[in-house]
Amino acid sequence: METLLTVENARSRILETVAAQPIDRVGLQDSLYLTLAEAVRSDDDIPPFANSAMDGYAVRSDDVAGGEAVLEVIDEIPAGSVSALTLRAGTCARIMTGAAVPAGADAIAQVEWTEALPDGRVRILRAPAAGMHVRPAGQDAKRGQRMIEAGELITPPAIGMLATLGYGTVAVRRPPRVAVIATGDELLDPAEPLSPGKIRNSSGYALAAQVVAAGGVPLAPLLARDHPDSIRAVIREALAADVLVFSGGVSVGDYDLVKQQLDEAGMELLFWKVKQRPGKPLAYGLLEGKPVFGLPGNPVSSAMCFEQYVRPALARMLGRNAVLRPRHPAILAAATAKVPGLHFFTRGIATYEADGRLTVRDTGPQASNLYSSVLGANCIIHLPEVWTEAPAGTPVDIEWLTWGAM
Ligand code: AMP
Ligand code: MG
Image (cartoon, rainbow, N blue to C red; front, side, top):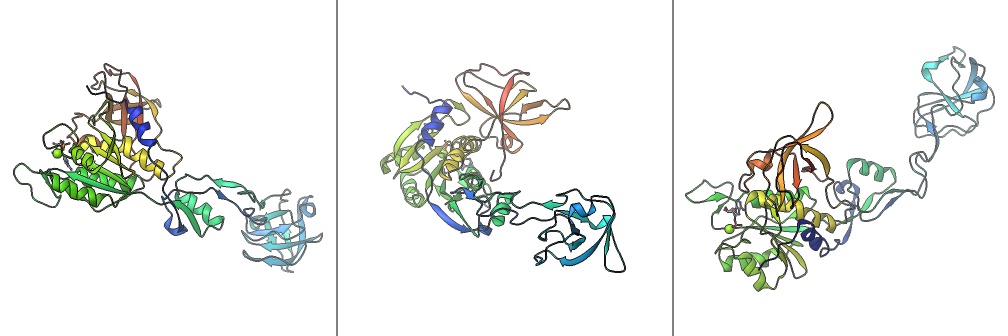
């Protein structure tokens, strides 16, 4: 008798067996889309000094409080310089955007509100209020403030903040190396012409790409034939990686040798089969302490199982705070197939209607060999195990399919 796990149980059993990767220090320019291993703090006030938001004149707002005023220009302060002078009553300093506001000044009269006089003085035509166009020190970040949490993805704006804060190098989680192994005597390389009975190895390539999109590093494409020797050899090679992902060979066919060979290699099988469609024969275990996923070979099954199980495992290894994609409520625009007892990962196309509602429909036939059902999808529609049907109008949860590092 077999007991099938629920999707949630399967996922939590995986997540509790994976550990965070070691920490590396990398140059800032190499850190994009890696994951922060330490919280980022500001050692300084940012901006470090009060500076001008405008080209114009640094003034004492009291001097111009009456409206128009004619002031003596005692200095010129380009960005990058500091004035050695202090503004006394009746004086001002020419100042450029980003330059430090001189002592004594408390406002900037933008150049458009001024008129340079032939005698070198300047007429202020409109009075700036105290503080106007002065960017105070510490407005962006306070000294000691935590700016980014450990476990966050290093995005382009994070790079900007890290640079601002003086991080020339960043502590990141080493991206897990993932061996993707396609199995099957029927498989040809994508570059090979078709021959009778053969198909091209799509899952191997798609999964390697999913590894990259999930923040991992795929090993060179590995291929095993449906023969114990071939699978044994590839298992040894794959153990150079941190995670092993097999596609194919985990269902119950006579040639489904992967589980058998992993067992002989000493893998501790943690579960086999999950109440889900596609991807019911999913297997998971630990070999030499490394997570091993046995994904069904059908391209749609392997793609969905990767997104539902391997991707969260890689996120956990990367120390990511967000391990699962968020889900969003939507309304089924048309009925879609459902049987009770299996959680469905139905590929969908979600759209915002003119009235602001998010509606979703499936991508058409959902058979697990039809890769076009994934290609055209922008989301996964989650249809819970207990549902017997999914008619039009049903509220559902969707998960946007984003194929980037996010
Ligand atoms: P299996 O899980 O090995 O029984 O394979 C299930 C189905 O997926 C069969 O139709 C295989 O031909 C197909 N399949 C297995 N591996 C791949 C692959 N790497 N690329 C495309 N199709 C595959
Ligand atoms: Mg096979």
